[in-house]
Length: 304
Image (cartoon, rainbow, N blue to C red; front, side, top):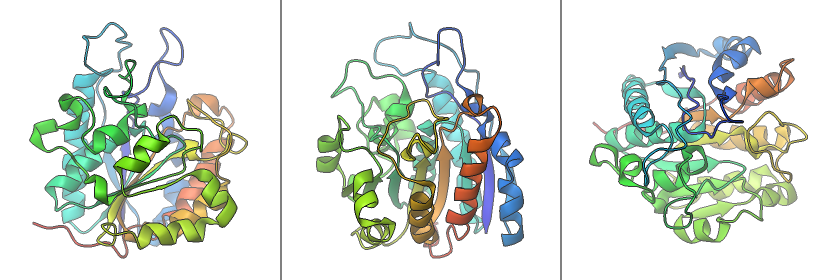
């Protein structure tokens, strides 16, 4: 049974402009208002509360070798992970509504302490910036995949000595643009990489089949979905829109195929500040309600 958790974090993002705060913290309630909870309720979905983040700071002058809002990110990851572990052990499939994709740290911690699983990272970018390939690292929402497989500073990639949270050999990425700067590095580092143009050319069913038959993903995985995987023609309400993305139907079809194998999922980086009339919230709500309605139905039980 799906358990919906609100995690309205914006801690991993740069400010949209000096003195401003990213709007992703408003996304869970915007999606509720767009009808997501009502659409999932007839299928047995329950509401599992909210895990609130600490205060966002525009800490541009933070100490060297740290990420933005580092202490708050780590604290939120621990608390959200605790909620996810509890829900998983109760037999629920958590659906986390973010927030930005630094939430992947919590999913990784929860996966690690409840028996492990793979990761399917669906995103318009590889999110693989890290200290080994960039001097400008520090906004974890663009670095979450690197942190998830242990390629970041220990403060975020090895919380409580549990890193790497996901085995790179059981990790797949879906949806980056072919010109992504880290595509080659990611392809060498993880089990499977499927850029967006592969889905556009060959269809969602083929991409889903490659995920479901990949060694290491057959026992289940966490499904991280960043809505900037959609083309800006359909989803401009994100912090880093890039052309060449998926259509809502392509994303829905892919999610519908892979969601039953996932033990939980997170949906991130939608910014309601960029969606004043709610049009894009309704698009996301429709994708999630249709694409993730069978979340967790075929996933493996957690190890105790």
